[in-house]
Structure formats: C-alpha cells, structure tokens
Length: 188
Image 1 (tube, rainbow, N blue to C red):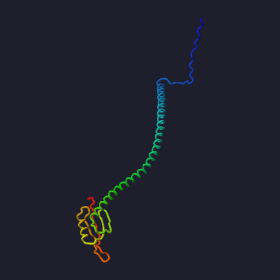
Image 2: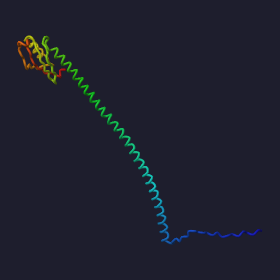
Image 3: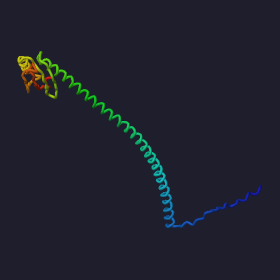
Image 4: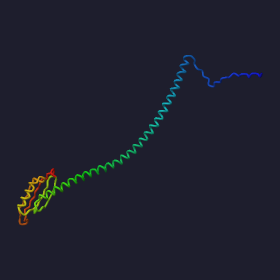
C-alpha cells in the first residue's frame, strides 16, 4: 500500500490583524461600529436621494422658466389681440348705437315733414337730443295756424314754442318765424 499522503496543516494568514476587545466592552464597541456603519450607509443613501432630487428640481425650475418665457410671449401677443378685440367691439357698439339713433332720427324727420304745412318754407333745421329748432317763412297767417294745430295734435312731436315771429316788410314779403318743438322719443 502506498504511503498515505501527509496532511499539511492549513495556516491562516491574516494580513490585517486587529485586536478586538473582548467582553461586554468589546460587544458594545462592535455594536457601535456596526450601528455607525449603518448610519453612514443610510446618510449616503439620503445624500444621494437629496442630490437626485436637487437635480430633478433644478431641471423642473429651468423647464418652468422656459415655460414662463413662452407663456409670457403668448400673453404679450394676446394683449395686442385683446386691444384690437376691445377696439373692434367698441366700434361695433358705436355703429349699433349710431345706426339705431340714425334710423330713429330719420323717422323723427319724416314725422316732422308730415306735420309741417305745405306752402311753408323751411330756412333752418337743427335736431338736438329731444328738441328740434327750426325757422322758416310763410305767406298767410292761416299757414301758421295750420302749423300750430298739426303740432298740437301730434303725440310724437309736441310743445311747439314759437320764439320769434316777424311780419312782412318791404324787403321781405313773407312772415318769418323761429320755433322749436319737443321730441317724445319714447313714441318712436
């Protein structure tokens, strides 16, 4: 039989020998160093999370800044559009009111023309809010009486006030007058 191989004892070489305290002090030191290692690991994890969060927040801040610039440009563009829109709306409102008042004015003038006696000449005509001032001339007093009667019967144009009445002279062969009449706008 062959000779049994000789067993060589294994030697344990520890290149970093350390002397660990033994006993309860050793256990406490070991526990504190283990807890410190875990605390350092947790602190590094928190620091990495905070660093990642700061990068994300910085990116979000830059994105918001860019979005604010874009939206500010849009708002500036909208300002000019809003000004134009308001101006156009105001012009439309003014046109509506002028059209409405103009058509009422035409109706009022038509009513005045219907009441004004034939044969009388109209020299001036001025329409102001709620009042018509006019002047003219006529040949006979009967035309003046017709003028007074026609305006006194009207419920739309009334309150005839003849402020000036002149008899014919050598230079002017007709009667001349100046008058005003009140307009009842509610009736139009």
